[in-house]
Length: 497
Image 1 (cartoon, rainbow, N blue to C red):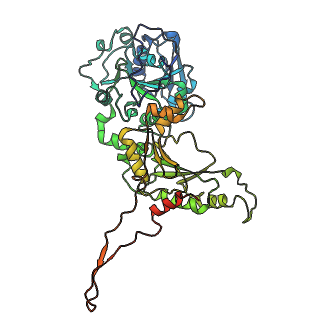
Image 2: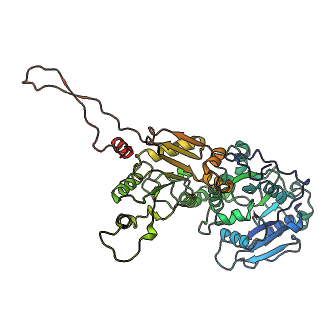
Image 3: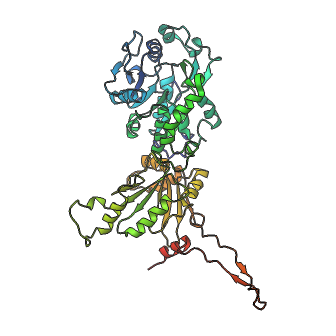
Protein backbone atom coordinates (compact mmCIF):
# COMPACT_ATOMS: atom_id res chain seq x y z
CA UNK A 1 0.00 0.00 0.00
CA UNK A 2 1.09 3.60 -0.65
CA UNK A 3 2.65 4.87 2.59
CA UNK A 4 1.24 8.34 1.88
CA UNK A 5 -2.14 7.82 0.22
CA UNK A 6 -4.11 10.89 -0.90
CA UNK A 7 -7.00 10.48 1.54
CA UNK A 8 -10.23 12.24 0.58
CA UNK A 9 -11.32 14.89 3.12
CA UNK A 10 -11.21 13.06 6.49
CA UNK A 11 -12.12 9.64 5.09
CA UNK A 12 -9.39 7.31 6.34
CA UNK A 13 -11.27 4.19 5.17
CA UNK A 14 -8.46 3.14 2.77
CA UNK A 15 -6.14 2.70 5.76
CA UNK A 16 -5.95 -0.64 7.54
CA UNK A 17 -4.49 -0.45 11.03
CA UNK A 18 -2.69 -3.52 12.42
CA UNK A 19 -4.70 -5.76 14.73
CA UNK A 20 -4.01 -5.18 18.41
CA UNK A 21 -1.55 -7.70 19.79
CA UNK A 22 -0.79 -9.18 16.37
CA UNK A 23 1.88 -6.87 15.00
CA UNK A 24 5.39 -5.60 15.72
CA UNK A 25 5.63 -1.89 16.57
CA UNK A 26 8.67 0.05 15.39
CA UNK A 27 8.02 3.73 16.22
CA UNK A 28 9.12 5.19 19.55
CA UNK A 29 6.50 7.03 21.59
CA UNK A 30 6.95 9.87 24.09
CA UNK A 31 3.98 10.14 26.45
CA UNK A 32 3.80 13.72 27.73
CA UNK A 33 1.87 14.06 31.00
CA UNK A 34 1.45 17.68 32.22
CA UNK A 35 0.78 17.87 35.95
CA UNK A 36 -0.05 20.62 38.42
CA UNK A 37 -0.56 18.98 41.77
CA UNK A 38 -2.86 15.97 42.00
CA UNK A 39 -0.18 13.49 43.05
CA UNK A 40 -2.68 10.76 43.98
CA UNK A 41 -4.35 10.80 40.55
CA UNK A 42 -0.99 11.00 38.79
CA UNK A 43 0.10 7.84 40.61
CA UNK A 44 -2.86 6.01 39.07
CA UNK A 45 -2.07 7.45 35.61
CA UNK A 46 1.53 6.20 35.79
CA UNK A 47 0.47 2.79 37.10
CA UNK A 48 -1.80 2.39 34.06
CA UNK A 49 1.04 3.42 31.75
CA UNK A 50 3.34 0.88 33.40
CA UNK A 51 0.91 -1.87 32.33
CA UNK A 52 0.69 -0.88 28.64
CA UNK A 53 0.95 -3.48 25.89
CA UNK A 54 3.20 -1.21 23.83
CA UNK A 55 6.86 -2.37 24.05
CA UNK A 56 8.59 -0.75 27.02
CA UNK A 57 11.79 -0.12 25.06
CA UNK A 58 9.81 1.97 22.55
CA UNK A 59 7.98 4.09 25.13
CA UNK A 60 9.13 6.89 27.40
CA UNK A 61 6.99 8.94 29.78
CA UNK A 62 7.71 12.58 30.55
CA UNK A 63 5.91 13.92 33.62
CA UNK A 64 6.00 17.71 33.35
CA UNK A 65 5.67 19.41 36.73
CA UNK A 66 3.97 22.76 36.13
CA UNK A 67 4.90 24.49 39.38
CA UNK A 68 3.32 21.99 41.80
CA UNK A 69 3.52 22.72 45.53
CA UNK A 70 4.70 20.38 46.92
CA UNK A 71 6.71 19.34 43.85
CA UNK A 72 5.66 16.24 41.93
CA UNK A 73 7.54 13.03 42.76
CA UNK A 74 7.76 9.85 40.75
CA UNK A 75 5.95 6.93 42.43
CA UNK A 76 7.22 3.39 42.77
CA UNK A 77 4.88 1.95 40.12
CA UNK A 78 5.71 3.71 36.86
CA UNK A 79 6.96 2.86 33.37
CA UNK A 80 10.62 1.90 33.11
CA UNK A 81 11.57 4.93 31.02
CA UNK A 82 9.96 7.72 33.04
CA UNK A 83 11.48 11.18 33.40
CA UNK A 84 10.43 14.14 35.54
CA UNK A 85 10.69 17.50 33.75
CA UNK A 86 10.13 20.69 35.70
CA UNK A 87 8.84 23.85 33.99
CA UNK A 88 11.40 26.63 34.30
CA UNK A 89 9.64 29.38 32.32
CA UNK A 90 5.95 30.16 31.95
CA UNK A 91 2.94 28.30 33.28
CA UNK A 92 -0.23 26.56 32.16
CA UNK A 93 -1.08 23.30 30.49
CA UNK A 94 -0.09 24.44 26.97
CA UNK A 95 3.32 25.55 28.16
CA UNK A 96 3.76 22.29 30.09
CA UNK A 97 2.89 20.14 27.06
CA UNK A 98 5.29 22.15 24.90
CA UNK A 99 8.02 21.75 27.52
CA UNK A 100 7.55 17.99 27.51
CA UNK A 101 7.46 17.80 23.71
CA UNK A 102 10.75 19.72 23.46
CA UNK A 103 12.40 17.23 25.81
CA UNK A 104 10.86 14.20 24.07
CA UNK A 105 12.96 11.70 22.10
CA UNK A 106 10.09 9.68 20.61
CA UNK A 107 8.98 9.77 16.99
CA UNK A 108 5.39 10.10 18.21
CA UNK A 109 4.05 12.49 20.83
CA UNK A 110 1.23 11.08 22.94
CA UNK A 111 -0.48 13.57 25.22
CA UNK A 112 -2.22 12.20 28.28
CA UNK A 113 -3.68 14.14 31.20
CA UNK A 114 -2.46 13.44 34.72
CA UNK A 115 -5.94 12.46 35.92
CA UNK A 116 -6.51 9.77 33.28
CA UNK A 117 -6.38 6.00 33.71
CA UNK A 118 -5.79 4.42 30.30
CA UNK A 119 -6.65 0.85 29.36
CA UNK A 120 -3.74 -1.51 28.70
CA UNK A 121 -4.02 -1.19 24.91
CA UNK A 122 -4.38 2.60 24.85
CA UNK A 123 -0.92 3.59 23.60
CA UNK A 124 -0.77 0.65 21.18
CA UNK A 125 -4.20 1.43 19.74
CA UNK A 126 -3.32 5.03 18.89
CA UNK A 127 0.27 4.34 17.77
CA UNK A 128 -0.64 1.55 15.33
CA UNK A 129 -2.24 4.00 12.87
CA UNK A 130 0.96 6.01 12.64
CA UNK A 131 2.78 2.93 11.37
CA UNK A 132 0.49 3.06 8.31
CA UNK A 133 1.03 6.69 7.28
CA UNK A 134 2.55 9.80 8.78
CA UNK A 135 0.01 12.63 8.59
CA UNK A 136 -2.58 11.42 11.09
CA UNK A 137 -3.72 12.58 14.51
CA UNK A 138 -5.21 9.73 16.50
CA UNK A 139 -7.74 10.39 19.24
CA UNK A 140 -8.46 8.30 22.32
CA UNK A 141 -11.78 7.90 24.11
CA UNK A 142 -12.61 8.94 27.66
CA UNK A 143 -15.37 8.54 30.20
CA UNK A 144 -15.78 10.55 33.40
CA UNK A 145 -16.20 9.03 36.88
CA UNK A 146 -15.91 10.24 40.43
CA UNK A 147 -12.55 8.88 41.56
CA UNK A 148 -13.13 5.62 43.52
CA UNK A 149 -10.74 4.42 46.24
CA UNK A 150 -8.40 2.35 44.05
CA UNK A 151 -4.65 1.93 44.48
CA UNK A 152 -1.86 2.13 41.89
CA UNK A 153 -1.19 -1.57 42.40
CA UNK A 154 -4.82 -2.44 41.64
CA UNK A 155 -4.63 -0.34 38.47
CA UNK A 156 -1.40 -2.03 37.40
CA UNK A 157 -2.81 -5.55 37.81
CA UNK A 158 -6.30 -4.90 36.38
CA UNK A 159 -7.00 -6.66 33.09
CA UNK A 160 -9.49 -4.04 31.94
CA UNK A 161 -11.05 -0.82 33.19
CA UNK A 162 -14.33 -2.49 34.12
CA UNK A 163 -12.57 -4.24 37.02
CA UNK A 164 -11.86 -0.85 38.62
CA UNK A 165 -14.65 1.51 37.60
CA UNK A 166 -18.40 1.46 37.14
CA UNK A 167 -18.40 1.94 33.37
CA UNK A 168 -22.20 1.73 33.16
CA UNK A 169 -22.49 4.71 35.48
CA UNK A 170 -19.68 6.69 33.84
CA UNK A 171 -20.42 9.92 31.99
CA UNK A 172 -19.48 9.58 28.32
CA UNK A 173 -17.61 12.36 26.59
CA UNK A 174 -19.80 14.44 24.28
CA UNK A 175 -17.27 13.86 21.52
CA UNK A 176 -18.19 10.16 21.34
CA UNK A 177 -21.71 11.06 20.13
CA UNK A 178 -20.20 13.26 17.40
CA UNK A 179 -17.86 10.48 16.35
CA UNK A 180 -20.78 8.04 16.09
CA UNK A 181 -22.93 10.47 14.06
CA UNK A 182 -20.17 11.12 11.53
CA UNK A 183 -19.14 7.52 10.82
CA UNK A 184 -16.06 7.74 13.01
CA UNK A 185 -15.31 11.29 11.73
CA UNK A 186 -15.09 10.00 8.15
CA UNK A 187 -18.01 12.25 7.22
CA UNK A 188 -17.24 15.09 9.60
CA UNK A 189 -17.00 18.61 8.15
CA UNK A 190 -14.80 19.83 11.00
CA UNK A 191 -13.22 16.77 12.64
CA UNK A 192 -10.83 18.86 14.73
CA UNK A 193 -13.77 19.65 17.02
CA UNK A 194 -13.48 16.29 18.80
CA UNK A 195 -9.71 16.42 19.35
CA UNK A 196 -10.12 17.97 22.77
CA UNK A 197 -6.88 17.30 24.52
CA UNK A 198 -6.64 14.69 27.24
CA UNK A 199 -5.49 11.88 24.92
CA UNK A 200 -4.21 12.15 21.35
CA UNK A 201 -1.11 11.07 19.43
CA UNK A 202 0.68 12.56 16.44
CA UNK A 203 4.12 12.58 14.80
CA UNK A 204 6.60 14.77 16.68
CA UNK A 205 7.47 16.58 13.43
CA UNK A 206 3.82 17.56 12.92
CA UNK A 207 3.55 18.80 16.52
CA UNK A 208 6.48 21.16 16.02
CA UNK A 209 5.53 22.12 12.44
CA UNK A 210 2.34 23.83 13.68
CA UNK A 211 4.16 25.46 16.60
CA UNK A 212 2.88 23.30 19.44
CA UNK A 213 0.14 24.53 21.76
CA UNK A 214 -0.36 28.28 22.21
CA UNK A 215 0.49 29.30 25.81
CA UNK A 216 -1.54 32.51 25.43
CA UNK A 217 -4.73 30.47 24.99
CA UNK A 218 -5.87 29.83 28.55
CA UNK A 219 -9.20 28.18 27.68
CA UNK A 220 -9.88 25.87 24.75
CA UNK A 221 -6.17 25.45 24.04
CA UNK A 222 -6.65 21.89 22.79
CA UNK A 223 -9.37 22.89 20.29
CA UNK A 224 -7.28 25.81 19.02
CA UNK A 225 -4.27 23.50 18.57
CA UNK A 226 -6.40 20.94 16.74
CA UNK A 227 -7.72 23.65 14.42
CA UNK A 228 -4.15 24.53 13.43
CA UNK A 229 -3.48 20.85 12.85
CA UNK A 230 -6.47 20.77 10.50
CA UNK A 231 -5.06 23.75 8.57
CA UNK A 232 -1.80 21.80 8.30
CA UNK A 233 -3.68 19.09 6.40
CA UNK A 234 -3.77 16.17 8.85
CA UNK A 235 -6.43 13.46 9.01
CA UNK A 236 -8.10 12.83 12.39
CA UNK A 237 -8.66 9.18 13.36
CA UNK A 238 -10.58 8.26 16.54
CA UNK A 239 -9.92 4.79 17.92
CA UNK A 240 -12.63 3.27 20.10
CA UNK A 241 -10.14 0.70 21.41
CA UNK A 242 -8.13 3.44 23.12
CA UNK A 243 -10.37 3.75 26.16
CA UNK A 244 -9.56 5.75 29.28
CA UNK A 245 -11.19 6.94 32.48
CA UNK A 246 -11.06 10.60 33.48
CA UNK A 247 -10.98 10.85 37.28
CA UNK A 248 -13.54 13.52 38.13
CA UNK A 249 -16.45 15.09 36.24
CA UNK A 250 -15.82 17.78 33.60
CA UNK A 251 -16.04 21.47 34.51
CA UNK A 252 -19.15 21.84 32.33
CA UNK A 253 -21.06 19.73 34.85
CA UNK A 254 -20.27 22.26 37.59
CA UNK A 255 -21.15 25.44 35.69
CA UNK A 256 -21.79 24.84 32.00
CA UNK A 257 -22.88 28.39 31.22
CA UNK A 258 -19.68 29.97 32.55
CA UNK A 259 -17.48 27.24 31.12
CA UNK A 260 -18.84 27.96 27.63
CA UNK A 261 -18.56 31.73 28.03
CA UNK A 262 -14.99 31.50 29.31
CA UNK A 263 -13.74 29.72 26.20
CA UNK A 264 -15.64 31.75 23.58
CA UNK A 265 -13.27 34.76 23.34
CA UNK A 266 -10.26 32.53 22.66
CA UNK A 267 -12.01 30.51 19.97
CA UNK A 268 -13.69 33.54 18.39
CA UNK A 269 -10.35 35.25 17.77
CA UNK A 270 -8.42 32.18 16.64
CA UNK A 271 -10.86 29.86 14.84
CA UNK A 272 -12.48 31.78 11.97
CA UNK A 273 -14.61 28.78 10.99
CA UNK A 274 -16.65 29.38 14.16
CA UNK A 275 -18.87 31.86 12.36
CA UNK A 276 -21.39 31.64 15.18
CA UNK A 277 -18.87 33.45 17.41
CA UNK A 278 -18.26 36.28 14.91
CA UNK A 279 -21.66 37.87 14.53
CA UNK A 280 -20.63 41.38 15.60
CA UNK A 281 -20.14 43.42 12.42
CA UNK A 282 -17.27 45.84 12.25
CA UNK A 283 -15.08 43.80 14.60
CA UNK A 284 -11.45 42.95 13.88
CA UNK A 285 -10.32 39.43 14.78
CA UNK A 286 -6.87 38.02 15.47
CA UNK A 287 -7.12 35.43 12.65
CA UNK A 288 -9.10 36.62 9.59
CA UNK A 289 -11.49 34.44 7.60
CA UNK A 290 -10.06 35.18 4.13
CA UNK A 291 -6.69 36.44 2.94
CA UNK A 292 -6.85 38.36 -0.35
CA UNK A 293 -3.49 38.07 -2.13
CA UNK A 294 -2.74 40.53 -4.94
CA UNK A 295 0.49 40.72 -6.91
CA UNK A 296 1.20 44.45 -7.33
CA UNK A 297 4.54 44.18 -9.14
CA UNK A 298 4.70 46.71 -11.99
CA UNK A 299 1.20 47.98 -11.15
CA UNK A 300 0.18 51.60 -10.69
CA UNK A 301 -0.89 52.88 -7.31
CA UNK A 302 -4.31 53.90 -8.62
CA UNK A 303 -5.12 50.34 -9.79
CA UNK A 304 -3.97 48.86 -6.48
CA UNK A 305 -5.89 51.44 -4.47
CA UNK A 306 -9.10 50.47 -6.29
CA UNK A 307 -8.44 46.74 -5.75
CA UNK A 308 -7.72 47.17 -2.04
CA UNK A 309 -10.80 49.33 -1.51
CA UNK A 310 -12.97 46.72 -3.21
CA UNK A 311 -11.51 43.89 -1.12
CA UNK A 312 -12.04 45.68 2.19
CA UNK A 313 -15.50 47.03 1.35
CA UNK A 314 -17.18 43.75 0.44
CA UNK A 315 -20.10 42.09 2.20
CA UNK A 316 -17.53 39.79 3.82
CA UNK A 317 -15.60 42.11 6.14
CA UNK A 318 -13.51 39.49 7.92
CA UNK A 319 -10.55 39.78 5.53
CA UNK A 320 -6.95 40.84 5.32
CA UNK A 321 -5.22 42.01 2.11
CA UNK A 322 -1.68 40.89 1.23
CA UNK A 323 0.12 42.92 -1.41
CA UNK A 324 2.95 40.95 -2.97
CA UNK A 325 5.73 43.00 -4.52
CA UNK A 326 9.46 43.72 -4.37
CA UNK A 327 9.18 45.79 -1.20
CA UNK A 328 12.67 44.85 -0.04
CA UNK A 329 14.05 46.77 -3.04
CA UNK A 330 12.95 50.00 -1.45
CA UNK A 331 15.99 51.44 0.25
CA UNK A 332 15.65 54.00 3.06
CA UNK A 333 17.82 56.43 1.09
CA UNK A 334 16.64 59.76 -0.30
CA UNK A 335 14.66 59.49 -3.54
CA UNK A 336 13.05 61.81 -6.04
CA UNK A 337 9.94 61.92 -8.19
CA UNK A 338 11.81 60.19 -11.00
CA UNK A 339 12.65 57.18 -8.83
CA UNK A 340 11.98 53.94 -10.81
CA UNK A 341 10.24 52.53 -7.71
CA UNK A 342 8.00 55.59 -7.33
CA UNK A 343 4.72 53.62 -7.57
CA UNK A 344 5.90 51.05 -5.01
CA UNK A 345 7.00 53.77 -2.60
CA UNK A 346 3.67 55.51 -3.01
CA UNK A 347 1.81 52.26 -2.23
CA UNK A 348 4.01 51.56 0.78
CA UNK A 349 3.38 55.01 2.22
CA UNK A 350 -0.33 54.68 1.52
CA UNK A 351 -0.90 51.22 3.02
CA UNK A 352 1.91 50.59 5.53
CA UNK A 353 -0.05 51.75 8.59
CA UNK A 354 -3.29 49.87 7.90
CA UNK A 355 -3.40 46.72 10.06
CA UNK A 356 -5.64 45.02 7.49
CA UNK A 357 -3.00 45.30 4.76
CA UNK A 358 0.28 43.37 4.64
CA UNK A 359 3.22 44.12 2.36
CA UNK A 360 5.38 41.07 1.62
CA UNK A 361 7.85 40.04 -1.07
CA UNK A 362 6.49 36.52 -1.54
CA UNK A 363 3.25 34.84 -0.47
CA UNK A 364 3.55 32.00 2.03
CA UNK A 365 2.83 28.43 0.84
CA UNK A 366 -0.44 28.56 2.78
CA UNK A 367 -2.24 31.31 4.68
CA UNK A 368 -2.59 29.18 7.84
CA UNK A 369 -4.22 29.66 10.26
CA UNK A 370 -6.53 31.70 7.99
CA UNK A 371 -8.88 29.09 6.45
CA UNK A 372 -9.28 30.62 2.94
CA UNK A 373 -7.11 32.52 0.46
CA UNK A 374 -8.22 34.43 -2.64
CA UNK A 375 -5.85 35.02 -5.55
CA UNK A 376 -6.82 37.02 -8.62
CA UNK A 377 -5.67 39.72 -11.04
CA UNK A 378 -5.12 43.03 -9.29
CA UNK A 379 -6.77 44.88 -12.18
CA UNK A 380 -10.04 42.97 -11.70
CA UNK A 381 -11.53 44.45 -8.51
CA UNK A 382 -13.73 42.24 -6.37
CA UNK A 383 -17.48 42.75 -6.44
CA UNK A 384 -19.02 43.32 -3.01
CA UNK A 385 -20.46 39.79 -3.15
CA UNK A 386 -17.47 37.97 -4.67
CA UNK A 387 -15.76 36.60 -1.57
CA UNK A 388 -18.99 35.81 0.24
CA UNK A 389 -20.33 33.83 -2.71
CA UNK A 390 -17.06 32.03 -3.38
CA UNK A 391 -16.80 30.87 0.24
CA UNK A 392 -20.46 29.86 0.20
CA UNK A 393 -19.83 27.82 -2.96
CA UNK A 394 -16.86 25.84 -1.64
CA UNK A 395 -18.47 25.25 1.74
CA UNK A 396 -21.32 23.32 0.15
CA UNK A 397 -19.11 20.39 -0.84
CA UNK A 398 -15.89 21.32 1.01
CA UNK A 399 -14.06 21.74 -2.31
CA UNK A 400 -10.34 22.45 -2.00
CA UNK A 401 -10.11 25.08 -4.75
CA UNK A 402 -12.68 27.10 -6.67
CA UNK A 403 -11.33 28.46 -9.97
CA UNK A 404 -13.28 31.23 -11.70
CA UNK A 405 -12.47 31.38 -15.41
CA UNK A 406 -12.40 35.04 -16.46
CA UNK A 407 -13.35 36.06 -20.04
CA UNK A 408 -9.77 36.93 -21.08
CA UNK A 409 -8.37 33.51 -20.17
CA UNK A 410 -7.03 34.49 -16.76
CA UNK A 411 -8.39 33.04 -13.52
CA UNK A 412 -9.32 34.01 -9.99
CA UNK A 413 -9.31 31.33 -7.31
CA UNK A 414 -10.35 30.65 -3.73
CA UNK A 415 -8.16 28.11 -1.95
CA UNK A 416 -9.01 26.12 1.18
CA UNK A 417 -6.05 26.19 3.56
CA UNK A 418 -6.51 22.65 4.87
CA UNK A 419 -6.46 21.37 1.28
CA UNK A 420 -3.29 23.32 0.51
CA UNK A 421 -1.71 21.95 3.69
CA UNK A 422 -2.63 18.37 2.75
CA UNK A 423 -1.20 18.87 -0.75
CA UNK A 424 2.08 20.21 0.61
CA UNK A 425 2.37 17.13 2.84
CA UNK A 426 1.80 14.80 -0.13
CA UNK A 427 3.30 16.42 -3.22
CA UNK A 428 6.68 15.48 -4.53
CA UNK A 429 9.07 17.98 -6.12
CA UNK A 430 7.67 19.23 -9.42
CA UNK A 431 4.22 17.70 -8.85
CA UNK A 432 1.16 19.82 -9.60
CA UNK A 433 -0.42 20.87 -6.31
CA UNK A 434 -3.87 21.19 -7.89
CA UNK A 435 -3.74 17.57 -9.05
CA UNK A 436 -3.26 16.44 -5.45
CA UNK A 437 -5.98 18.78 -4.19
CA UNK A 438 -8.29 17.40 -6.89
CA UNK A 439 -7.80 13.93 -5.38
CA UNK A 440 -8.11 14.95 -1.72
CA UNK A 441 -10.70 17.73 -1.77
CA UNK A 442 -11.69 18.52 -5.35
CA UNK A 443 -10.96 21.43 -7.72
CA UNK A 444 -14.01 23.09 -9.30
CA UNK A 445 -14.21 25.56 -12.24
CA UNK A 446 -17.09 28.04 -12.59
CA UNK A 447 -17.90 31.05 -14.81
CA UNK A 448 -17.65 34.56 -13.32
CA UNK A 449 -21.31 35.59 -13.61
CA UNK A 450 -22.37 34.68 -10.08
CA UNK A 451 -19.24 36.05 -8.44
CA UNK A 452 -19.09 39.29 -10.47
CA UNK A 453 -22.82 39.86 -11.05
CA UNK A 454 -23.99 42.55 -13.47
CA UNK A 455 -25.78 45.51 -11.88
CA UNK A 456 -29.54 45.15 -11.81
CA UNK A 457 -31.14 47.09 -14.68
CA UNK A 458 -33.97 49.38 -13.49
CA UNK A 459 -37.41 49.25 -15.07
CA UNK A 460 -38.10 51.96 -17.70
CA UNK A 461 -39.76 55.01 -16.18
CA UNK A 462 -42.74 56.49 -18.05
CA UNK A 463 -42.91 60.31 -17.82
CA UNK A 464 -46.34 61.76 -18.78
CA UNK A 465 -46.50 64.82 -21.06
CA UNK A 466 -47.06 68.24 -19.43
CA UNK A 467 -50.78 69.01 -18.99
CA UNK A 468 -50.73 72.07 -21.29
CA UNK A 469 -49.07 70.29 -24.15
CA UNK A 470 -51.00 68.40 -26.82
CA UNK A 471 -51.64 64.79 -26.07
CA UNK A 472 -48.65 62.69 -26.96
CA UNK A 473 -47.41 59.17 -26.56
CA UNK A 474 -45.67 58.47 -23.23
CA UNK A 475 -41.94 58.77 -23.55
CA UNK A 476 -40.06 55.74 -22.17
CA UNK A 477 -36.91 56.80 -20.38
CA UNK A 478 -34.34 54.30 -19.21
CA UNK A 479 -32.38 55.26 -16.11
CA UNK A 480 -28.79 54.57 -16.92
CA UNK A 481 -26.83 52.27 -14.62
CA UNK A 482 -24.38 54.12 -12.32
CA UNK A 483 -21.35 55.46 -14.13
CA UNK A 484 -18.23 53.37 -13.84
CA UNK A 485 -20.34 50.38 -12.85
CA UNK A 486 -18.55 47.19 -11.86
CA UNK A 487 -19.60 45.43 -15.06
CA UNK A 488 -18.09 48.14 -17.28
CA UNK A 489 -14.95 48.24 -15.16
CA UNK A 490 -14.59 44.48 -15.40
CA UNK A 491 -15.09 44.49 -19.18
CA UNK A 492 -12.70 47.39 -19.55
CA UNK A 493 -10.06 45.68 -17.41
CA UNK A 494 -10.32 42.51 -19.45
CA UNK A 495 -10.36 44.24 -22.89
CA UNK A 496 -7.10 43.54 -24.73
CA UNK A 497 -4.94 46.60 -25.45
